[in-house]
Structure formats: structure tokens, C-alpha cells
Image 1 (cartoon, helix red, strand yellow):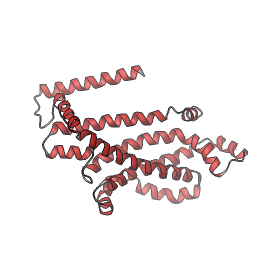
Image 2 (cartoon, rainbow, N blue to C red):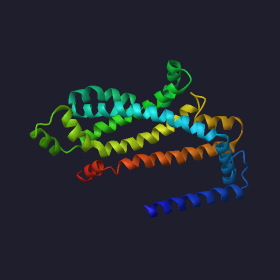
Image 3 (tube, rainbow, N blue to C red):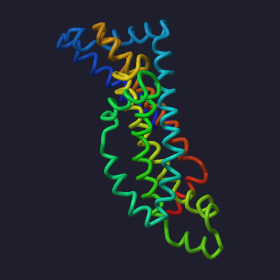
Image 4 (cartoon, helix red, strand yellow):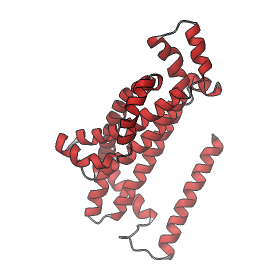
Length: 252
């Protein structure tokens, strides 16, 4: 862990040094690409003014609700479809048809249905997470060792008991990986959606800074998005350390 942290800070320091060297050596104008010290000053300005806090909370609120709704619907559906061959044959073409459609393509319809505000952004987050989670969950169920299912049947496990005691624990490692991937996608989508569909959030902050020709604030917003994404990824990775997840992973 200590080596990983040291490597992260080393890479981050080298990136800052390269950034400063390039912008200074080539004398790049601030309105094209600001220097690190200008970005740091802009970020501190937004922190003192409360802009960064308010817009970060707004983005996290939308991502939390959209992602949570996707989890509570997509994971149970994926577990069910993964075990039901006939439902899988019927629903899989529909899922594969809808899955490649970019969530951003739904923005015009989301605005027509929900108007301006949190609801269209939450809807887009839900769409960006729902279909990948369903597909990953179905795949994780199909990859469960047949031995586990035969032993469960020998012990008379059926219905909800089979799902809760065998299928879900066995599929959990792959589901956690799916959560990690889809959360990253959701964080990407919310920033893009906020540039169009709402009047708050980090995406809106970047667009507002661009309209004001404050490129230092634009890059500061980008840095904030990257740092928050890093924290969210770390939070999801903590789930991989759960005893049940580690046990299931070792038994694969």
C-alpha cells in the first residue's frame, strides 16, 4: 500500500513538473492552457467562494441517486435473467439493442419528459449504469461453477434461498467489478449532462467558466472531476476487501 501511494505521488509530481515545463518553455498563453499555479489559484478561489463545494455536492447527489436506482433494478434483474434461459433468450436482444445507445443521445427526450433540473440528469445516470450492470450480472451468473448449483440442489435450496446463499455470493466479485466500471461511466455522463440539462454541478461549472473565458477555472474543474473520480473508485474498491467477496474470488 505504501509503495502504491508513493508511486501515485511520484507520477502526479512528474505530471505537474511536465505541465509547468511545457507551458513555460513554449510560452503558451493562459487563455489556451493555463499553468499549474494559475489553476491552483482558481481552485482556491472557487473553494473560498463555495462554488466548488456546491457544485460537487450537486453532481454527487445526482450520481448517487441514478447509480443507486440502477443497482437496485439491474442487479436483481440480471440475477434472474442469468438463471432463466427462456427469459434470457427473449430479453437479451432488447438489452443488446438498447445498451449501445449513448446515454447522451437521450438528453433531448429527458428534457422533454422531465424538464430542466435534477430529474433528467438522474435519468441519464440511471441509463448509463443500468444496461452495463444487467449485462455484467448476467455474465457473472453464467460463469458460476455448476458444482455449486448441484450441491445447492442436493441440499434442497430453491427460490430466494438459492439466490441469497449461492448465486449472489458466487457472482459478487464480478458484480463488484461491474459496479466499479459503471460508476466511472456514470461520473463521465453526469459531467456531460450537466453541461446541457441543469444549472449546477461540475459540468455546469466548467461551461460557465468557459463562457466567462476563465480557462484556469475550466482546468480546475477538470482536476476536481479527476480527483473525485479517484476517490469514488477507491470507495468501490473497498468492497472488494469484504470477506465474502475475497472468499468467492479465491474459490473461482
